[in-house]
Length: 219
Image (cartoon, rainbow, N blue to C red; front, side):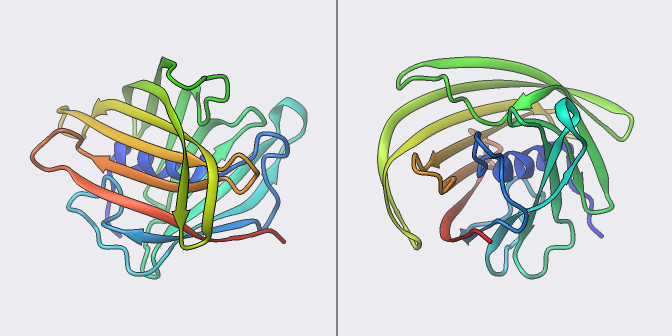
């Protein structure tokens, strides 16, 4: 099984948790299927995705303040390292498990949505990820761009919130690494409609990944 970097795991976790709804977080078996263009985000070397990306709400654990929800992301039919992200009722990311390769924890837990940002506003956030005995600081630059109408295989979605994040960390060799995420989120409850991830942002080795909603299944 191939190893993936800590920043790779961060990319996967951000991708899947943005699909959730703040009111109920999600329902067991709820699933989002995306048409995938380009390689798996942050894979090194870029890993081809054969088939669709599928995000699924798979488990609930704990009670009260300790209640946690888990979302599994599978990238194509040959994915050997699906990721499982764990979030709380405030949609903060606590950890990500990537296959049997590694578990990543976030201190403090990382927001996965920015509902208080108005169009044109921006904010920053800092956290640390702990993985395989190492700590890596991450810096987020987040801004809300103008709302947009988005057309994807699942149809036309009006008034989608457009959130853009640039996450800066370090790769396993200690070199700076930047990833840009653009998320378009439906205002009527379908979750993440479209995502564009530019890995190694503004470098000679950057690559682009696009996920476009094909189907949202609610059990």
